[in-house]
Image 1: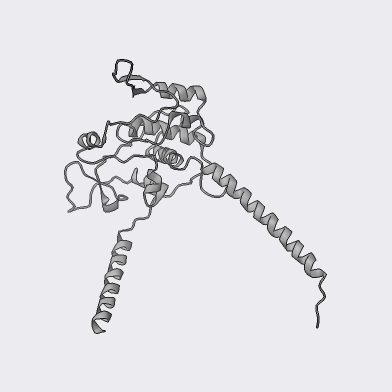
Image 2: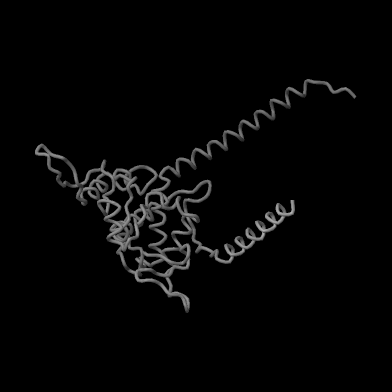
Length: 259
């Protein structure tokens, strides 16, 4: 029995120590206004289109989005490019297809039905090109990381010089928002890196917000329809509650109470 209580006490001490260490390492993420949050949240179409531009020009050389098709860019609830714009975007990429009648693979311009072109042929090729690290697919990255959009938004702006006395291996960088503060991806954003077609100034903060908004849509493309459905469900429940209340009131009004 004594050993049993000793084990419990030791377990509690270890858990408290772990909790304290975790709390000490926890960093407050950067905050910004997300238009898609809340019951009536909607995606900012201009931000989605700018975010796609940042992904294409900055991120797509390493990170795939294997669950997205080019037709998704023109669908309701997304960036809502026109059909012609989406076709032009798809056609700007070379897609491997085949085999043809001779049994050979060939390349052709992309079509709306094609998935986003992968930057590497396979996982091994991706790792070889990135010092052994595999750049994660970005299709559902926002959902796969604790902290969601706030974490991704902060991570893109969290590159700093390492603290004094901290040594980093070659190809490893310090990021105060990264788990463990060490990341193999170098800082990819700098002011003016892309030129937005709508005239928006491409600051690091703006590009971080735009590409994170795009990644949120990629991970949850039906967010707006879900919000609409949720609002309709709430209205329905309110009406149903009112009807039930008056129905019960009418039923009980015909029953005499005995004193």
